[in-house]
Length: 391
Image 1 (tube, rainbow, N blue to C red):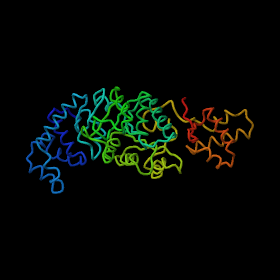
Image 2 (image 1 turned 120 degrees about the horizontal axis):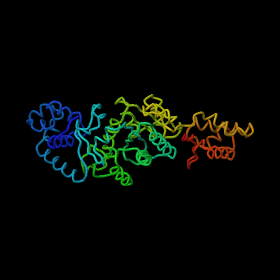
Image 3 (image 1 turned 30 degrees about the vertical axis):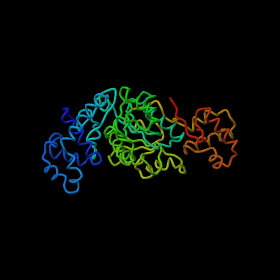
Image 4 (image 1 turned 180 degrees about the vertical axis):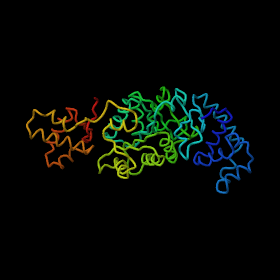
């Protein structure tokens, strides 16, 4: 890593604009000519010869002095707006991205602290998933982030500032005192979607948090931009956690990218018939992702030390002890339902009725008892999940 002067940074900014969707070509130019300023000092025929026939007509006319001048003007405006550009290999550029084959040539950055203070201090963990988050997913997303906040080593939470899992993870991090970084699919001057504007602003102002993007200012929210953005989320983090996702979606793409980068991937298992869990279940089945169960175990697997949170250590024993004064039949019913919920997270009350052949009122009464005594949680759709305990 090194410090760049303004000329080198402007050159990288210009190259990032030109080769944003094909960073490998841009990086190849840097390697071939020995640095960003050398690329712009090279003769046009030298650039053309390197690019070859496929890329020559598309890119060669763009590597010009005017591109450099536009980038230099852009950097001056960024500085006035409290933002900056971090070039590939510069101090503050996330080290993990350098390990990827297609790192962006630079990142636009907005934060209260310097990039070095944000990215060089702690592990980075991506928490991602669907925009159509269920109550089950929302609860577990917050539980996961809370568990991470209670680890001995405090990580940074990285996500995409989208609706659903992303913004839930960002807000949970802010609530539980963890730094969080939003990787945007727009320019640094535009927080998208508008519903997350206040959250994005708060992140930019909170010490240790930041907004980043490889898109130039005034870049709008176009579908293909989100796909390109996902590689940064996957590459910047040592671990990616998929909370909920359909079989197809940005979260699935990010998780698979993380796996291709040789990163750890975890997924929250869900009901077999729930479309929002089918993506997670598929990654677990394909052994791309490891299932999330006990949160204390997850934190330790991530190398963050121990945490104060977990599922109840001996679920069956605690249920039995809690209801030891009841008659054998009532105690057995409570234990059956509790263990069914533990093994089938997100199971509905109707499904429990079908599973045991019991009436709705009988199951509902048992579920209410278990919920009141802190063994399970029930969302508004009457889906049941084992409750996370704070020890």
